[in-house]
Image (cartoon, rainbow, N blue to C red):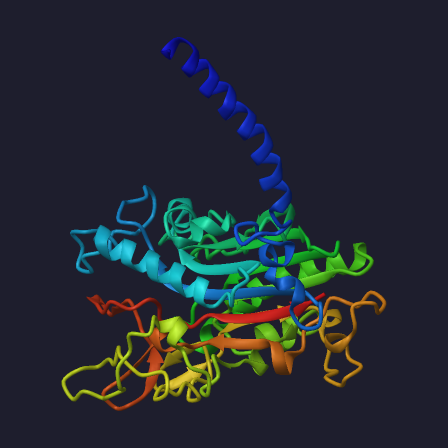
Length: 412
């Protein structure tokens, strides 16, 4: 009996499979719950009446060093046996915090261009892009290799889907070898934006104010002149160049390096920056929903836990806090053809999908912000709000950076 039963059972299963499978395929909807639609894959397609957003962010991340010694550079203070006791757990904690901050600042769509200052080498940026939660976002990066004695460089992270790299170079700031030290190189990268526009991006970390602002100003003006000279060449050779300069300039928009040297070529967006999220917006999604009421403890210099309703960042009026004052030394500068002041119903931001091609633009009064969520800030004993730093002198404080990120949105 078994001799004929097994072959017959196999034949029956084959017939049923051939009949049921086509019926199941026909009944499956074209976009099931497990099949993301084009809008789900690209949520930014419906931003602001079908206009698309391109977000650019700059951030000084306060000495993102690894724990190893780089031959030829004075990085001994950032090693496990140094006075700072810079260990691997502390290093990876900072890396993770930087990545979480960049994800939080993205607002569902990855930031297209990120300029980071005070990074040591390729390794730390590779770790940030490949071994933190940024890994899933597919960032590529560029980094300078400057002659700075501490080994500090600048790095540019970009989304290859929206920013197609054309070329890049490091601009070496000239200096007197007999009496001056080399400073950080300026990174110049050329991209093709999604609409086809060519964007020239300058990422800089100008010389510090060591010795006083007036004494050190000529060094920053020299670095600014290098950007201005390159920008002038681009304006002469390109039909409609779009220029962006960002980074830690160690100067306010009113200082000579920007107001006198760069102003003929760039518009300073930093002047218009406002805190984000706005004080009225809850931050549960940014802080993880684990905060508790804000209190100023007498025996502590920091306040790490606050409720979203109690936290107020309206006192934040800059990206860097020094000697009890906020300053705007982190900059995003753009060529004047980016600027749109029109906020009327007929402005480009309110244009319909069927209207003619609009220019690549940003509105300084609406699209420029200092990213200031609760987890990047702390209160001092005197009640002053300031960035949550990694170090206080050589004492490990456990924060993320002594600067706040600055970002601007562009529309096309």
